[in-house]
Length: 305
Image (cartoon, rainbow, N blue to C red; front, side, top):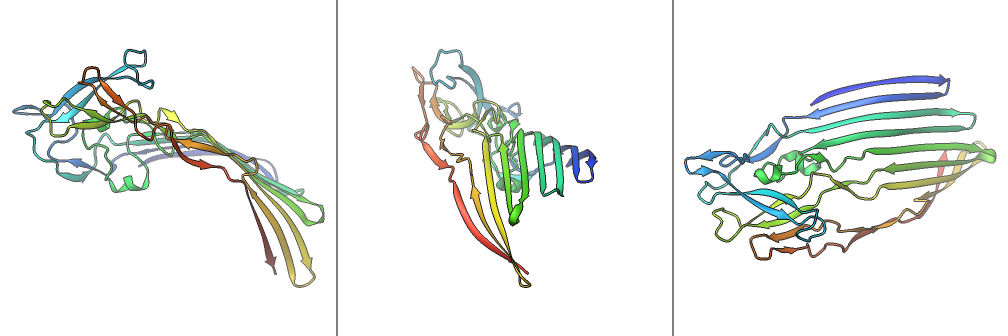
């Protein structure tokens, strides 16, 4: 991994600090399994021709209707039917990469005059073609399994959140009351429209009857952004020489941010060789996947001695 870090801090007063930081990281030499017999290069050849036989079709686009402006031509590849069986081995595909950069604006108001505040605004980009998720670190994803996995493979990765805002604030009130808040805002997570199955014609000389492909660059679409505000109300009671008892109420999701997650990806199956072409949407498309957004209250007490 290559990494560059830099930053400037300025103390405007004895209890107030502003900062700006820059982060740049690039990951290469990533672990991923590859087919050592057939690889993933669509131009690879042997005495009988190309390993991977191209098949060009028309994707009807988001509307699922052929002959409209959002149609596009795509070419996928099937492994020639006389090629050796696939054998997987871990390696370091040279094309695998991840790049991250961020500009971070920070502020830190230390506790003074009965209040404190800390926060940051992050503007960033996290792109690549190798997943940063937990399972991917073992090198056993579908990436680099065949040439189709490299189609529209570079773009915003799952953890890419271009805008992140966090703000924490506490104020001490008379009679040992205090109020604290925690505000968060994050850009929505990226996702990609996919074609689950592109079926080859029955007489196509390839091993497998269908392939999967990204219909657009990775991370072309985003889910709704996330916004949340938590609040704590606290009252402290002094018990002479024994210590202090603090009673508090935490209100999570004070603003009642809520919503419904749908299966937004059509994830269609396409038989382009039929006349007319057959295009079937995923049976889950448009249906509810989950709901979110519960406002909850937690009451507690703390004894300090």
